[in-house]
Amino acid sequence: MSMLPNLSRQKELLANYDRIANVIQTISAAKVDLVAVSKLKPVSDILTLYNHGVRHFGENYVQELVTKSQQLPKDIQWHFIGLLQTDKCKVLAKQITNLYAVETIDSLKKCKKLNACRKEVNQAPVKVFLQINTSREEQKSGYSLDNLSAVYETVEYLISEECDYLTLEGLMTIGSLQQSTSGDGNHDFEALIGLRDQLNEKYGLSLRTSMGMSNDYQEAIRQGSSSVRVGSSIFGSRPPKII
Ligand SMILES: *Cc1c(COP(=O)(O)O)cnc(C)c1O
Image 1: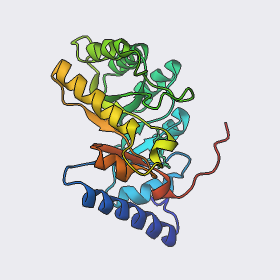
Image 2: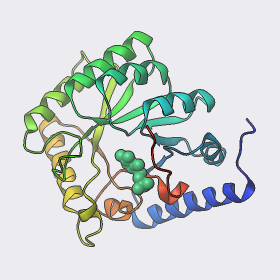
Image 3: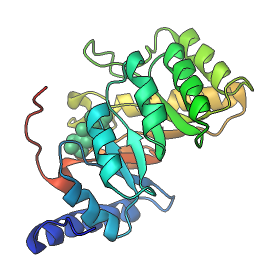
Image 4: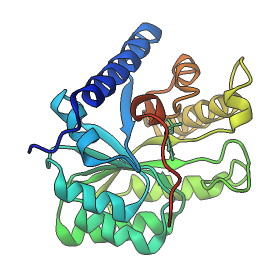
């Protein structure tokens, strides 16, 4: 494929990616996944990083992900990190054969839908993260910390034999901007780690955590994140989304 951006753009992308990968290594001896969030950025940018060995990319919009996945190599490991609507589960599960993870699960219904659709096409199981609304902000989706029975119910389904095309990978949160800029310990990240520990204990699991974005990934790693989702620090600022 010869759809690459100009050389200075290529250099910029690689330098940004390498810088962040180095920072991550400096902060943590443990392995932390770096997901490059490429929403609203062209396939040429993604291909540049792909040629550099990057495989984990995050996208927010189902149709954009479908289009990009058709144009890009099949060994990319796509993470869906956008708002998930039940009626879009089918497209994700069926059309993105190399869908690696869905990080924004917020209901049992969506798990059942994803599992059933993935089964129909008999593709590789998809990893899922349950999104937790740790900041209790109304505009954020995710399971509420005040209703853990909904979380338990979903976990129990995901670890049951009935659910054979999804694997429970961990918990995900976004956290509030206020917490990510407050300087010391982020309480939203702390809450996610606390819930992870509780679920690990209750069900004998070893769940991972997806937390940390451009402006708070360093703090997230210090607090024990196992996967960070970084967009603008790699790709630069994004154009506004026009729907
Ligand atoms: C856009 C987005 C990111 C990346 O955000 P940046 O601040 O650009 O790093 C990470 N996670 C989610 C859920 C997003 O929607």
